[in-house]
Length: 300
Ligand code: R5P
Image (cartoon, rainbow, N blue to C red; front, top):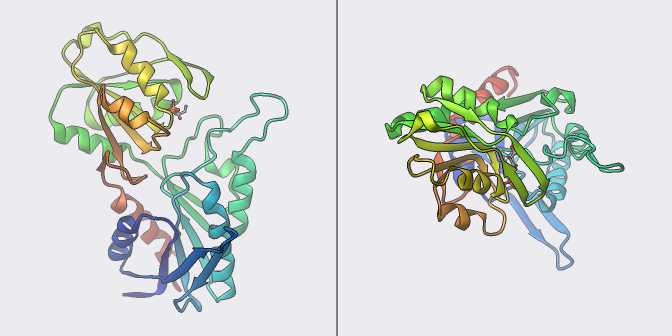
């Protein structure tokens, strides 16, 4: 076992924490955490951390209640002698508000990146929403590593052994759809999306006549309210394609989104966010670059 590295799970994804500790052959750190009656956070580290490198798994979907415990843990680990800290968050939050759309708006991605850069030495995540910010280096001051889900999705699609047409619901999705197409050999089309509000979305009519009988696979990085996928499904109805599949890298499924989508399509996600729709495994894809980062430091 690598005695110099310890992983703390600050999120409720014990399965992913266990897979990472097994694959990296490192110790799982012991934490005692709870809320005081006033809902402030109590945190105690019960593992020896002196001179170790710490990995913190804290998956930042539904982020706000997780931020204070995360910063407290990072600060406490430094106090206890940890030399370097990496943050593992399969879903990187606050990337979608990447521009001031209305006067006076907070461009969330920027202050959030500043905050995280103050506490961590390395950040690893899976397919963050890179759109108007095209690289994490533009906002994060620490080294970052982006793991791509496209190879995992392409493998899953190939294992289904069906004729599929990949559909990207908006221009941002082209980066994922084109890569999955390249790796799987499936054709793709990309639609135009107009967003008028959080839950008010319209997509252009897909040109799919030449793909009659193919199964449409709608692919997006995030499924949040589900409106992007639902609008796309409505445009596909009656176009002569097979039963749709919706694939999301990050299945957030706000409110009733999962139920509404499941009524019309098979819904598949990676296990970036734990959910019954998870069918595409990410642990090894995260473990490999973490191993490289740890090996770059002889003390880790
Ligand atoms: C943003 O453009 C993303 O790529 C997704 O299309 C978006 O987050 C999906 O959100 P919703 O499910 O709320 O339509």
